[in-house]
Amino acid sequence: MRTTNVALIAATTIIFGVNAEIAPEQERLYNTVAALDTAVFDAFNHCAESGQLDKHASYFAEDVEFYHDNGGVTWTREDMIAGTRKNVCGKFSRELVAGSLKVYPIKGFGAIAQGSHRFCQFSGGACEGLADFTMIWREQNGKWELTRVLSYGHRPASEP
Image (cartoon, rainbow, N blue to C red; front, side):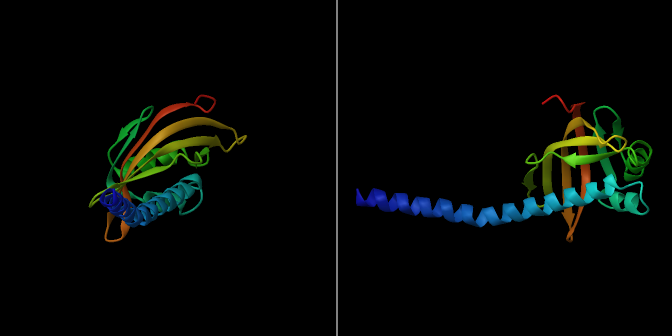
């Protein structure tokens, strides 16, 4: 009986010890990606203002692939930013749905971010659109950039 209890305590210590070491790393990654999400979309939301569209563009790899269920695919940062300039700036903003952001590490590369966002019209302020997203962040030499973006499941905000 005593041997079983010692083995159980040792196993529990190992399990919790490993989790205690992983948890701060996962929390740091989550906080990093959440801050990046806030920054990239702050620039997106203000892209009609001087310098903000360039700031927004700086978060994306030159060869970013952007997949949009309604708008199609763009294969470069230049094309993606042209679409943002034409279809977004001064028209609507993006808000992260509170509590929806999930972040998963990609060993030796960066992270996957998933969540839901809502879109709000500047004229009238109504938040009528809702969609899901998946974004692939790459970290190289301390710089994070988006390499793949999927925006899908666009629907009225009244739908779940």
